Amino acid sequence: MLARSCVRQASSVGAVARQSLNRPATRAFTNSSGTAEASSVWRNAMTGGAATVLAVGSIAWYYHMFGHSVHAMTPAEEGLHPTKYPWEHVKFYKTYDAAALRRGFQVYREVCASCHSLSRIPYRTLVGTLMTVDEAKALAEENEYDTEPNDQGDIEQRPGKLSDYLPSPYKNDEAARAANNGALPPDLSLIVKARHGGCDYIFSLLTGYPEEPPAGANVQEGLNFNPYFPGTGIAMARVLYDGLVEYEDETPATTSQMAKDIVEFLNWAAEPEADERKKMGWKVLAATGVLFALSVWVKRYKWTPIKTRKLFYNPPAIAQKDIATRLSELKANTRQ
Amino acid sequence: MSGATSAIYNSIFRSNATMLGAVFVSAFGIQMAFDTGSSKVWDTVNRGRQWKDIKQKYITKPEEDEEE
Image 1: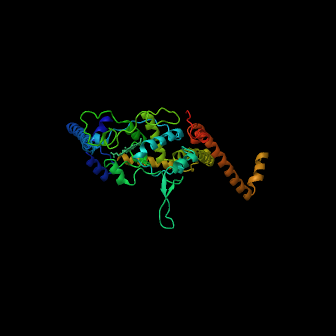
Image 2: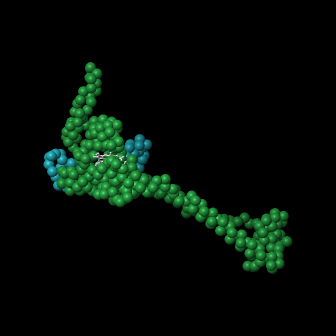
Image 3: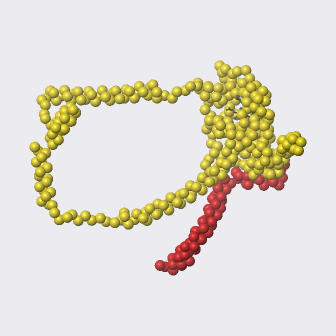
């Protein structure tokens, strides 16, 4: 039996195809003599082996040529990947921490606001998020805004209102560049969304300035070394130092505490809807969970009769004899 | 039909208008209950984090330093 099936495999594919085309009822087990049999087994094994080697080899070659990811930039130009920090406010079931937002806004006002605008945030959004109405109104009134043109067409100054947006430190981008050695301090409203690594990146950037650039690092005049900034030369110097601000809630204002608070605040600035979105998400999951359970129940209810019914087959009363005759005919044909 | 079932049938499902009314009223009620319930859970999970949890410190004495 074993020998026979070997022979069958060994006979060339073409021959089998042709034979089965010509005489469908006959299988091709014509025996060849011993040596021919051995050599064709050998040839078959060789062909299989060669095909395998070819396939594996070409995949390896292809991977070698095209499989590796290509980096247009050197690691220094990419910047160091930021550490992943376990942000509490990023968890699916956590809101922002209002106290942290409040501290972060204080850091923004006392430190970052002299260079960075936060132009998409109106005072009104601060109300009920991190300060009271009265505080926000007082804050708005500290700044002056243009009025609508009066009867003479003159524009006057008025104190700010809740509906005004936070003022920018510079009149325009050109003024900002001129004041910062040609580098534009980007608007921080959406910065968490606008940088790879988001919170982790900005935290790493703010806390990542080494005392000295490492030996051999090439830092241009007017730039500061920061390994996390793509290119490692950043126009913003280190701004956060221990004790720079004094928190009203007496949280110790270490560099990392301030960095954490400002990052959480900037995350809120970029995604003020996050709290509501997360809550809504859980509600959607709960409601669809109930609906899904209901639909499973309805499905089972509808299918119960179909799944529990029993089918009987009553064969028609012919045919024992017919079947026997046809079977023997078939056998005779195959033996031919 | 048992007593309760037939009572429900007679009072709600028998007339289309009552049935429709029942649907609207219970949708309203269930929505209120669901929203209140989920807000309660959410606020418990996030106790102390939201503005409403800390605003007391700032409303009464805005200039006061408070410990956290």
